[in-house]
Image (cartoon, rainbow, N blue to C red):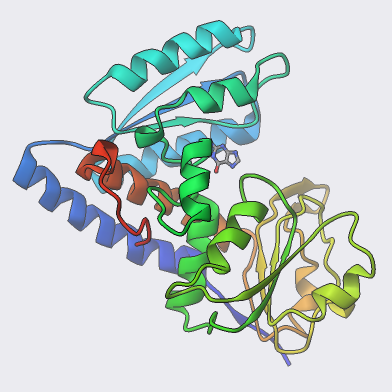
Length: 295
Ligand code: GUN
């Protein structure tokens, strides 16, 4: 059996067209152009590519993007200063600080300084708390993209056994929080597994839906997957074989029912959800309005 591909690139195109239409309507009605301020410190090549993709996607959707490129020697205080100015700039609706930050910068202080109502990454503790309580202001971009990919491809989440492999603040933890909620497009039974989990293959084989965000190339092998399972690969690893995910795609696709490719799976959806959050910020999520967060 060969798995069906869950095509994140195609879905991204559809959702970005929906967002562009919504942005055009919003701007016509209010005279406001949604605006994302992105901050990139240093020369990390992957981050440069991500930020360039974000800029391009904003432009195509009718969203203004303001880039702040700072040298690698930038201090925490200097960065906090810039964030303070962006927090107070009425024309800016979303603020994104590209991670990872160079060593020496206090990441926690920086992320905590972003005004929660402009926190389109949903990294601020206030926004994480709201997600945990099932009343999100913004949803974090990668987990939201995965949730949309599953919902819009008709994958049943209610009652499903979901195993999230990885416990990062960016993907694993919020993904688990979102899918366990008592809500449409959730209601899953969620297990979070990680590098210290015992009998890991037994755990992953229990998954109807396996979401992998470990950051280790080809970590998930065919014997770790239940036949027919849905496999979502969040990994992007640069290796001698080129760009590969956290899943051994060629072997796992013979066991899984559906699988995301790398590239062209989760990656494009992350940027798409950032556009959604920036529009939501401009709409008044920034004024304390509580939406469902979800598309
Ligand atoms: N670096 C890797 N993923 C992300 C993300 O979702 N947001 C930001 N700001 N940086 C990242």
